[in-house]
Length: 122
Length: 107
Image (cartoon, rainbow over all chains, first blue to last red; front, side, top):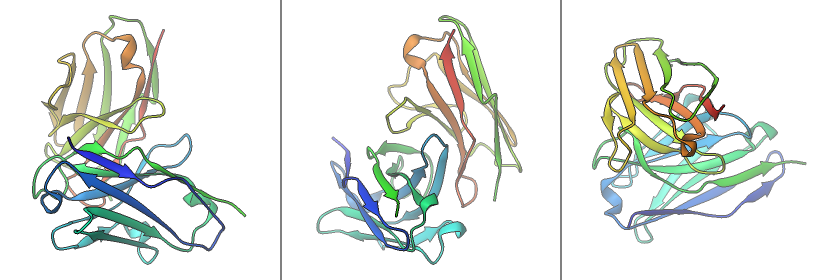
């Protein structure tokens, strides 16, 4: 069965970087785009960006340009989100999510990780 | 960026009631709209894609309609397990954007 298993919670100081992983299984890794979405405590959903695991191309939300990097490792079927220059406003639950259609960049997310809590605090 | 305006932000209804949520896009997004359910403490779950298509395994009491800029999501007969926050999301253009969410409670 399809699974997206995310790495554990992180606590970081302002200005630091964090790298969150999303280990996928149960499907052909290179056939489905993966998106990252975050949710601040008590708030709504915010899109961060998308990676195509096939060619590793990425698109990021303008808000995160220059601070975010999404990568993938085809040998371990894992995608990564790295966010740098962290500030308190980055405290949130970070989700990875798979697009429901093969080779579609964004048609709805059918499988989600459980989320990784990133806390930024001095 | 396309703004998604969802209303109401919260509602309270009785079991068995029909519940309706609206989502308005700031520009024409055709039918490139999804609806998600987020139960507290859980990841969002896709219910409706392409504005009106029920995701596999989702109960038929959930219904979506609309196109262009105006969309509606309904639960025909509210059940206790439907307590959640519901979000619309457009995928016509990047960045993908979500509505602010509608919290549904049982009266």
